[in-house]
Amino acid sequence: IEKADQKLKFAAFCLAYKRYKETNGDYEIKLPLFLDATCNGLQHLAALILDHDLGSRVNLIKQKDSDKVSDIYKEILDPINKKINDSIDSIENREKIIYNPNLLELKNLKLNRKIIKPLIMTKPYNATIEGMSRQLMEGVKETKHTLVDCSKNLKKKTTYYIFPGHKGQVILNKKSIFFIANIIHKEVFIIFPELKKVFDFLIKMAEICVKAEIPLYWFTPHGVKINQHYIKHFTKNISFKLGKRSETMVIATNSAKG
Image (cartoon, rainbow, N blue to C red; front, side, top):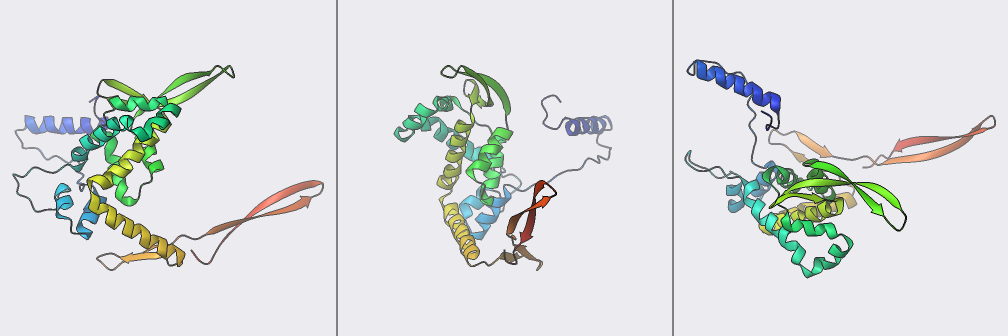
């Protein structure tokens, strides 16, 4: 139970299973079961471009009961870890290491499925490198280290993040985490090159619609029209006097167009 991510839910399952065993299966279990897809975003894109290879990796292809369920997060984990570990030996990254020696720790980094899943899951929804960096930091524990600036005789507490490694823990700063997010951001398209084409197409179409001031919209299979329409907000500061005091009021207005 102590190792479970959601301890109360796991304890409820244990009690229900115990009762099930005690009654030789004659027990009605009323625990809610949550069924999820395999990386919905990749499933949608694979279906749109009729990519049989990617579709099979996210369980869109018809299978038999005896077939093994594909796990795309585990499948791409090793290539991503290898890319991160080997990145330190790259000539183009030597200058970055000079300014951030913490990058040398990436040689020992070994991301697991739990850490990498949110990044891959949100990538098809146009997750940014900054967003992926936040997801990496939110998925691990943090620690505080005191750094001493000898030139200014100052002590400063800096936040570091604890990641799993090939040989024990790896302690990384925010710059190194951003570096990792950038690698993963690119590596997904290298592993699945067909995704790059459809992804670039959708982004380009969105940019054209924005320039033309046309809101994006689409219809669901049931005919519901969905709009993605953002209203521009403007603020104006108005200064005035109340007796001898000067005050400033901020007036917020919206434009008619998005």
